Image (tube, rainbow, N blue to C red; front, side, top):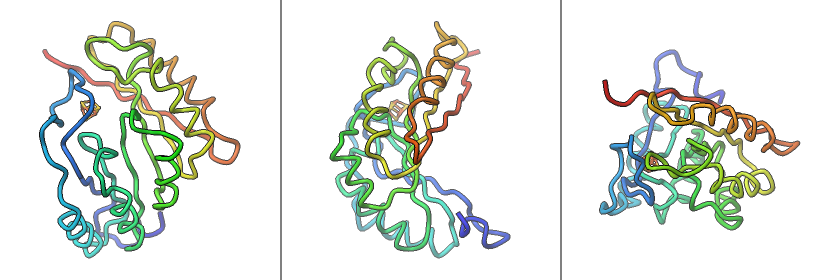
Length: 190
Ligand code: SF4
């Protein structure tokens, strides 16, 4: 964190998109497809090097679903090796105990898992009913910080779901690393 604020004029946070491919298809999203190849690792390494040269403090990897990139752990390691913080935004579906252990070893600083509703609907399948087991895995095995983010659409059928998710998030941290939660409001259409 100290590096992020070391200089008066430098990028504090940069988003790196290692792949646009996603395993889901949320109705409000235009930032994914199901056909793109992952950005080659040498290209990502050059971009990480350029961000480091600019004095960037934090590199956030999103997508698409960044955990689908086969070389993500190496890219995280490269980010950390160049003195920047590494964070990931994920829909959580690819998380397993082994995948969390690999993120620990890579040196990940922070993970944001997106949970939009309690049960899957036609807008989003990033649902507590599906992802609760992932929160349990993170609480048990993650050595990085975790934030749960809920995006509530203006036409959401059950906006009160955000409160249920926030309450669940408040119980999902470990004693060593308490989890935090954020609620993002989005409005689709007029
Ligand atoms: S999981 Fe994320 S990237 Fe994938 S479709 Fe949903 S919002 Fe878009």
